[in-house]
Length: 345
Image 1 (cartoon, rainbow, N blue to C red):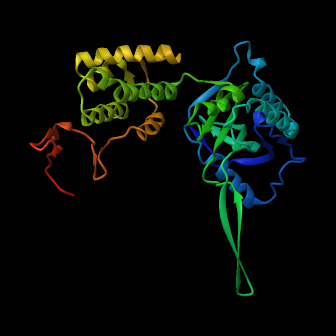
Image 2: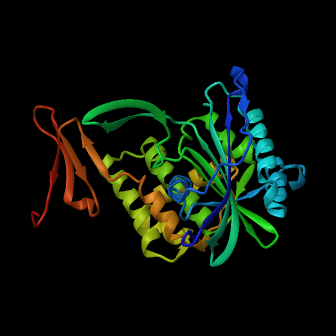
Image 3: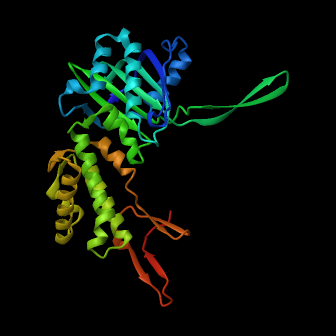
């Protein structure tokens, strides 16, 4: 758990990083940002940190050795000498530029920030943040002068929506990394996590819970109806059961999960085959028993859809007991669902 109760910002550097493959450039600033304005600092804190809470943790890595991970080395230098943040921030910006070779990567503003008094897992520590703003929005500004209104427009960053970011926490002699990537919708966006930061998930309860729920969702939405004749209502029921299991249990047991959620032996066998193949294909290492992370459950529950959409006329929200909904076809070939209920709210 990350807490920002008494957090302080001590230094902020900002540079503009373009797309190398499009012959855009890196534009370095010549000094640190002036953070004497308390209102500006509050805006920074909201923009940089509001998207972080119980996000998955990562470690820096490199196949040759951790000393070959460029961001790890630069972060280490800053922690050893915080007054050197500005010089190191320019090297970080150059490294990001060298990684920005996919033609769809957008240019943007890169912020490197030193924080004091962040609490993570009840440890008070310092952190270094790296944030990239890629999305710009138009806004209007109205000024009133001598009873006349002057309307202007400009382009800026929406402080309620962080595009890309990472926080690096110093814990004893090691670092833990937490990331945000709200534009990670296509393969080119992986450059932030894989090429620039070069990180891998910490195999803790958050990672285990998040990955296993993801596998269950993939199985239900992508695989089930390839092997079994199953309606959408039943698929939603499986998704609801999956989330309910994780919400109602403190410890995950794979065999228990399979029996409670899927019940049918054929479906269980299909899930086991899919699970094994998925882990091998994606090089994921999971345990069959682990403590469940409630924060990971909350995150995954938001993307487990329990809505049955019928043409453009109706949406049916299914929260449980699919025995109360049946599907059929009338004599004119029109499909229908019949719903049974006791009370109307």
